[in-house]
Image: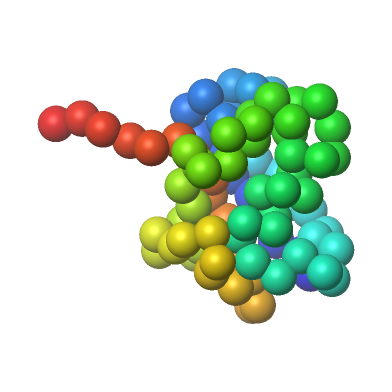
Length: 85
């Protein structure tokens, strides 16, 4: 399944790119599995996703948890927790 992945803040810095279009393997069914797969791809991913519990995700613009399914997804945005005012 092909989807766009967007990286923000220190996730983007560690990945070295702002976004990419990838063909996700068939066994990757949810956000948590996607993050684990991205971490295992290369050293940049391992660094960016070393603490997967800290990563937040938005699927097609809607915040979702790690168990959110990826069926029919066009874009996943991955970013650290945000704070501010």
